[in-house]
Image (tube, rainbow, N blue to C red; front, top):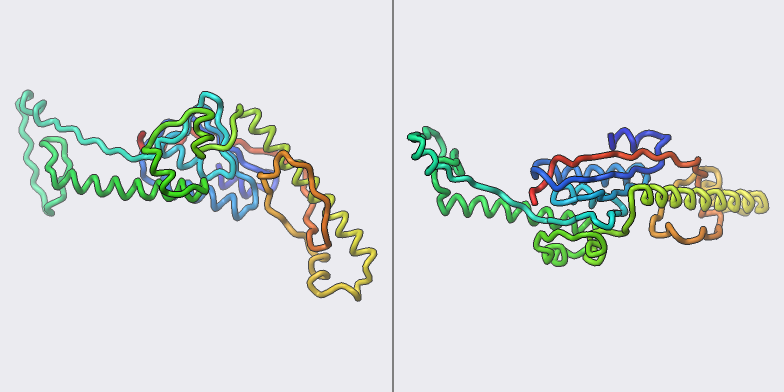
Length: 269
């Protein structure tokens, strides 16, 4: 769905609507990076909203967005990893069942549930968990422009509403409808700036003799340029054109595709 949206010429932006408490770790980092890459290569804004939860691996996915909204009661965070071993040996004994494992490779049956977990195996599993945690922290820190130390200091806490913004884990409070409206407004502002810059560039080109233009200016006047959307200026007035080099291609009225995701793949909270 995301790939279809980012390659569709009629789609001007993508909003991920997320409500998930998490799931398995497998593939989640690659998925989050793929979403960020699709947004960057297409030049289309990618926003997300936690409505009502983006936790653990679902938060990793939400972090790929340029701007992360959440409702006032929504939860985000839980930047951690957990593994569970269940020792069923006592229940096996009560049931009169004894398990014998025949295997090749000393670690082939590490962590099986029919015996207590040996200390060396527990240490190996903990090492794996720590490595996944480091990757999770690096992903969030990079996407959210935070230091790894700040992310690690959350200690996998869950943050609700305004507290999430104060912690740097989200950007703005609002409903899904309000997020869509803000995204539409940003696209409209960007389109308005592009139209004004294009008109100014065309006017300058008409009043300046072609012989006086440098080869670079001629090239820029002869081709359309695309400038990425700056969501940081969402609530600011459009700026006037500055020079022929700022010419940009006009944008049609934006159409939006909202991707609803249950984010089933995640790092358990």
